[in-house]
Image 1 (cartoon, rainbow, N blue to C red):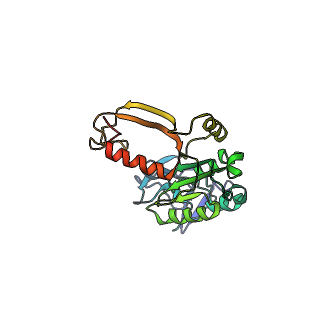
Image 2: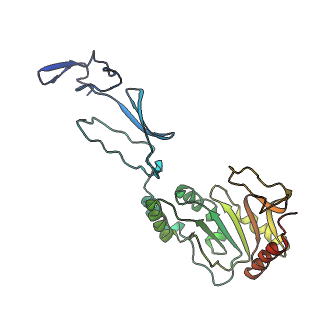
Length: 280
């Protein structure tokens, strides 16, 4: 291409001089038959975008229910000859991660004794990369690898069947995914909730739990007399039916921990429902 870029190219009985042809001729149509061009296609705000020879030419709105990360290949058809192509930023195949170090990252077998701590990590079906980051970081603490602490990703089904298919493969490979809804929970002394964008220092959590009295334990960022969100557009919206004035006691942030006893939890739920302990 470089060798002939300033020569004339025969097109039928006509000749096109590449040294004088401008890429943007004929109004908004950026292509000239027989003339090379450089095009870039990327996933941007609201849709796919394309530039030709450095100028933004067009964009395509994302198809309904399509998430940009699901696009993992580009197909070129028609009367276009490709000299070279470079792909960057395409999502890596999850199958490669599933195969590469699955044995090292797979959840250990559960001990016959009761767990010291069960960590439920709230995640979504398309957050595979976040879950892999957790598996390779704080989920490698000795307490987790030994089975004294169990970590489970709490995930609901996605509206996209391809995401659900990948989720099933991931669950089978790593054994650390709990799909919703579920009715049983692993026997444990304490239970902890966190999110897939948080780093949990398991050793410090266990050390703190040993120092605290276990009865009535609620561990985390606790707020007293906090005001509920009244903005109906907010995902934290709380109606007057749920809370009239202020919360007596509530946990804030992405993480909290409490003593777990299945019977006691149901008793607490009944007390909350009967005595309206959530509001004043």
